[in-house]
Amino acid sequence: MRTFYVTTPIYYPNSEPHAGNAYTTIAADVLARYHRLKGNEVCFLTGVDEHAANVYNAAKAEGLSPQAYCDKIAPTFVKLWERLNISHDIFFRTTSDLHKRGAQKFLNVLYDNGDVYKGKYEGYYCLSCEDFFSEKELTDEKICPVHKLPLQWLEEENYFFRLSKYQDRLLAHLHEHPDFVYPTARRNELLNFLESGLQDVSISRASLSWGIPFPFDPEHIIYIWIEALSNYMTALGYETESEQYQTFWPADVHIMGKDIARFHALLWPAMLMAANLPLPKQIVAHGWLTKDGEALSKTRGIFIDMDGDITTYGVDAFRYYLLREFSFGNDGDYRPARLHARYNADLANDLGNLLNRVLGLVNKNFAAIPVPTTPGEFDDEVKEMAQTTVDKLDAHINVFAFDTALETIWEFVRRINRYVQQTQVWTLAKPETKPRMGTILYNSLEALRFISVLISPFIPETAEKIQKQIGLADFDTVSEWGRLPAGLTVSRGEPIFPRVDIKKQKQSEPEKVARPKQKAGKKTTDLVSFADFQKLDLRVARILAAEPIEGADRLLKLQVDLGTEKRQVVAGIAEHYNSEALVGKQVIIVANLEPATIRNVESHGMVLAGSGDAVVLATLETEMPLGTQVK
Image (cartoon, rainbow, N blue to C red; front, side):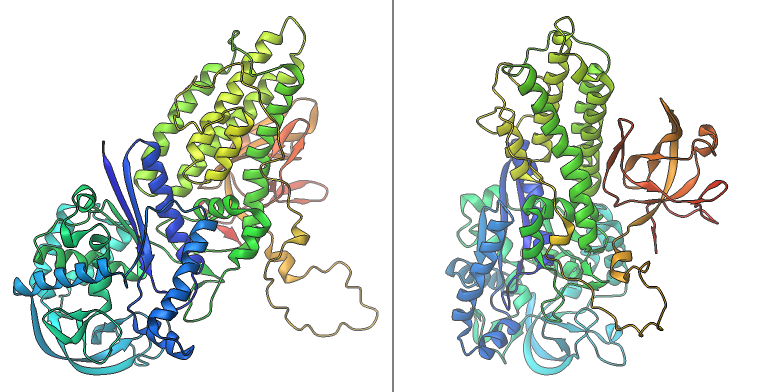
């Protein structure tokens, strides 16, 4: 059996966790669940990094000892991970004796190998980063580039690690293993940094008492980053070289935000080289989750209302939005209006309505899941797409393209919706066509079982609800066509994604801007607020195909490409545009419009056009990347 070891960074418990911590941990959870689904033996590590100066200061501000403060805050992480349905195997605290002994052993190895020496350090230091900044990284204002806070000047006698000694080996490793750091942009940044030269780094503090003492000099404590990075091994039992350590080290994937990639991709591998230990296989540094363009930060007080959105939409919708909306390597701006749109379009309409519709037809026409006896048109296409979806999903997850992986699954979801529509299964209840109806409904239910397996790493509660409603007592983890037993009794329950009234959402609205008073007599009833306008998500799309809708002279069915997904849109432009002439045009669509069914055709958006004596599509002066937001 193959093993898979995935880690999040261990988070500072100087305050309760925020959505940025949740984003990293959910992504790691997807990988852990996916590899369990494939039958691999998985270890998923997360935890808290307690020996930090900012933790010490937070404790002091509350009048608590650092240990008492950590004992108070650490459970808030556990509680959030439970709420987010995180399937970690180890929640690790660096105040544990297991970690202290392991970190001291690791430092002793570095010292015995001649890579630790004593010297004097002076420089500008960020308390929140727990890091010194070199002269080439400093601005004239001496401000931390991450936390936007003034840097402190520190001088003290410290122990140093000979990082410069490993510059050439690190360069060679990054060149020989191009996938060692993901994404490529992070790798290139690190290569540029490496090529500009590495300096030895301070690895002790004599001015702090909160931490793990040096085993050979108790007057010094181990610098937080040296100690923290070793947790990936100490949590497994590095100190005693336990069976768990021997089974899972080296890690397959370390996941973290891009701001701490340098520690993980340069300092950590160099220390492992110095200790003659295997290096982790991959360092994955995702983009920042932002709010209004600003990185989330406990230090700067920039938060997302996770509790409110999870209460309104459910934990799976929150997980789905974070994974589907943003490309994992890039920054992503959290927008409640987009969460609402994804919830209604993808979850409630595409998936939820499909489940309700199919279960309703089965309940109405059959006592149990029918036997598929009568194959027909579209059946083979659906079965082939099921297998293709599995293959594509594996390829996407292997490169951490969670958004594309989910879009691939949803292409299959939308295909099953079309299958139900194309076969007009609801019209086949007559005795002579009922066997065909049974086959179509069996295929639709099997597709839903298939989909439930594929979505289980991303939205596990929903996966289990689907399988329960189609009659499976135990969760089926095999995505192999034809495993759904005929004869099961389905149980159509409450909608898995009930409609949410946006007016009742408990979201933080943008601050209202004071507006000048209107002159007497001037009508203002047609004005909309800026907040309302912000709710519209206008995107650049390309028309891939256009065809008339039978019985509707004014309507065309358009297939459009938004870059990260393809959609079907109904547009009332048939009297003004030839179908063939539309193909290839770039247009602007309202991407977060609630889906509608028009003349039995589903529409997922609206094309913008000017309407007068003629209808003219709103197009662009020059080509733009698909999916570009129009503001």
